[in-house]
Amino acid sequence: MSMKKITKKMLAIVAVAAMTMGMAMPAMAAEGATAPDTINNAKEAYISKTYQTEVNKPMEFKFEATQVVESTREDLVKNNLTCTIPSIKFESTDLNVGEGTYTKLSEKITFGAFTEAGKYEYTVKESATTVPTVTDSAYEKLIMSKAEYTMDVYVVEDNDGNFNIEKIIVTKTKNDDGTDADGGKVDIGGDDAGKNGFNFVNTYVQEAGTGTPDPTKPDPDYTKYGALNVSKKVIQNVTDTAELPTKKFDFTANFEFPAGTDAATLGGVKGNGSDVTLKNGQCTFQLGHNENMKFTGLPVGTKITVTEAAKANYKGSAKVTINGVEQTAITATKYNEEIKVENKKLGQKKNTVDVTNRYNNVPTTGIIMNTLPYVLMIALCGAALTAFVAFKRKKAQR
Image (cartoon, rainbow, N blue to C red; front, side):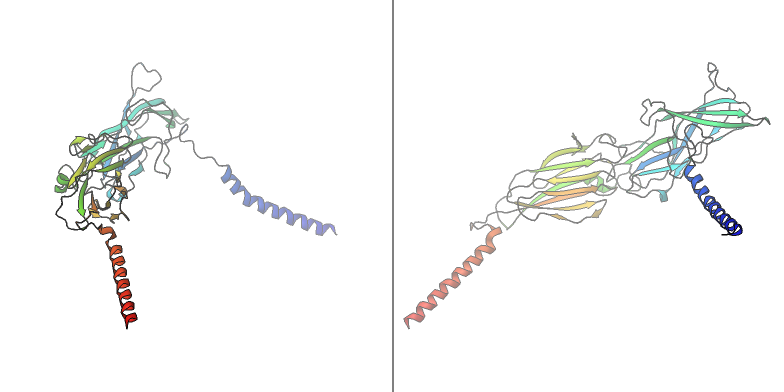
């Protein structure tokens, strides 16, 4: 092979290699790129808000940044410098009822003009003022965050005499419930996830069944049914002059409270006006014919499971209404079988579970109605057999 051909081949190989490396370099750079350190080396800061609510309640939250200028703190710049934290709004369109937890980031936190290099320190907490304001009552409550953070802003002066933020460090000093935090650094970045570590959690609670739009003026249904009403009726299989049995039926109610709430949030759960003691979210009670249990103090969004225990000679069914909408009825397939209404989420409007038990009573004839069809079939067969035998005898006598 001539030297000229060898040279051409070598150049071709080099060109291909160069193209391959050119294509690979961006990918390698992308793979090797590291995400910005928004905990230890952030130059911008954002606050995030977590809003827990089971109803469509628009709300605007505000924040306060108070500069620390204590004379004993020699490490701090004492010149007053304004820090502005944008409010965070949750519009009606942001709140898909049923999700329960929503999170948003604020716009960037801004500062006035720096006039001195050094460390500026701020205590950041949530403002007690919201839009609209919510006054805690027996029927609604806005649980405010008691979280607090320390925000340290480090400012340096460049060669041209300009002052710039070198980094911002935020540490958490109090949790949302007001207890002391561990003082660790938090993420203050403004990515698209909607949440960082510079976070405040609030919960809006409305009692189930109080209606709309103003729970402080409860719907008339609330007076009768409360947050949840469980009622009981007993009927007979056949009409009988005898009185209905006076037996009591055993019920169990399980409550799973929405995020940020518990049994005590609205002053405690009550049944027919008396305090209800819950064990792992569960309570038991008994109901007889034409009796009911009216629960109050249950937040909207509470998941309920109501179970009536099986009882011999009774067959149950349950008519269920949740948030004013009638649900598919629950019906036992046989006598002596439990009835269970499960995983229903209480709404702002009427919530009821109406249980009816059919008593398999014995009429004066002594025939249990549940077996009457079979007895009639046997009787008909017996009559047919008697007629057949009589016919055969008559035929044999001819």
